[in-house]
Structures are given as structure tokens and as C-alpha cells.
Length: 259
Image 1 (spheres, helix red, strand yellow):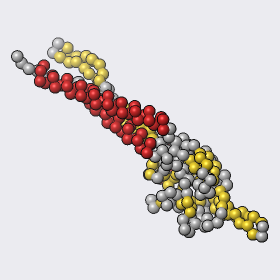
Image 2 (cartoon, helix red, strand yellow; image 1 turned 90 degrees about the horizontal axis):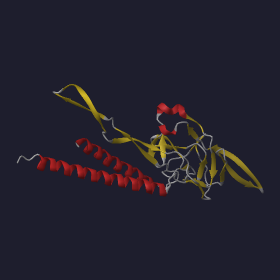
Image 3 (tube, rainbow, N blue to C red; image 1 turned 120 degrees about the horizontal axis):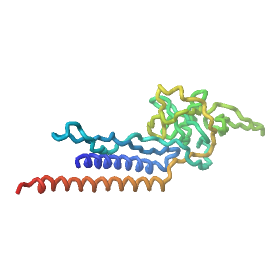
Image 4 (cartoon, helix red, strand yellow; image 1 turned 30 degrees about the vertical axis):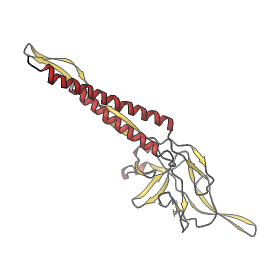
């Protein structure tokens, strides 16, 4: 009976954790390129019950008792979101595999959120203010009109005497991580690659689309279904704990009475 109380308590905690993850996904459904998280669970090892008494010199196996479950992993899903056309020349999206690189106060971070803008100096920056990195350093554009080619080349368009010319000023540096599950989420739709996995980074195979933004890879309907499931798990665990508590109360207050 006590083991049932423990198992119900672990389900209660797991339901709360699963609900927190789903709510966080729904709260970020409008954040460009947000990557949803999924919760996986693992059962505790079963406990073998054995009977031993004065009439039995050797122990006899009775059966197993489950110990409940625990959160095994909160995994990030890196499958791409839908690409929406915005028409803003500062908005960039990646079709296929790859990440943009931005330079933060804590080092280089990877992101697929291409909601960029230019500051007063003409440096291309991410939504949190971090400058976007190109193969030649920070991507500096100025106030000029520009285009970003599918391979990431940033070209400035000039017109002189009726002649239109394009000048290559930099290339957006895209990086692909062969095992994206090793990336650590750091907020602002950004990820950190731990130093011990630096060898997993390589030039990306994806292409750049200017005037597009990648949307969050979240299905609101599926997220709502998971939220309802987490609610039901939580409520069922509550009822089970209450039932076991009532049974224990009767065992102590009524069954144990000596008439």
C-alpha cells in the first residue's frame, strides 16, 4: 500500500513537469524558430518481494512491486517550422539544416531565429541585440540596400549612371551540428554548443531565404491534447493518493482497534 502511495506521488510530480513543458511551448508559439520540448519518462526499477518465515527455511519469491516513474529527459525537437513570407529584407530563414551564429556576451550562440534588424551603425543584429556573424566577422551592411543570396552571400546594390552593380561585402556564416541533441538551450531561441562537442560543427547544407521567417515548430492542437493528458494524469494521481490515504486511515483507526 505504501508503495502505491510512492508510485502515485511520482505520477503527480511527472504530471506537473509535463504540464510545465507544454505550457512553456504554448507560451512561445509566436516566437520565430522556437523549438518545442518533449518530456520522456522512465520507470524506477521494480522491487522483488520475497516471503520468509519460520516454516520456510528459504525465501520464496512473491512478485514484483513497481516504484513509479521519473522524468528521464526533456528533449528538444529540432524539426524545422513552417516558413512564412514577411517581405522584410532584414528577415532571414534557413531552408534545410543549419543555424545562424550570433555573438553574445557569453560567446557564440546558434539560432534559427532570423528576425534580424540593423542598428544605427548598420550592423545586422538578432532580436536580443547580439550581432550576426559572417565569415569575415560581424555582418556590417550600413544603410545601403542589400540582398542575401541562397548561399548566404550579402551583396550591396549600387546604381551609378544607370548601371546597377552588386558588391559582395560578406557571407552569413551558417553552421550545421551533426548531433543537434547535444546543444544546450540558453533562451531567446538560442543554443550553446559545449566545447567537448565542437567537432560536431561543420558548414551547413541549408540555404538562406531573404524576406522569410521560420515559425515555431509547434502544433497548437497537439500541444493542447498533451496539456489535457497531463491534467488528467495529475488529477488521477491526486485521487489515487486520496484513496490510499483513506485506506491507511481506516487501517490505523478501525482495523487495529482491539475490542
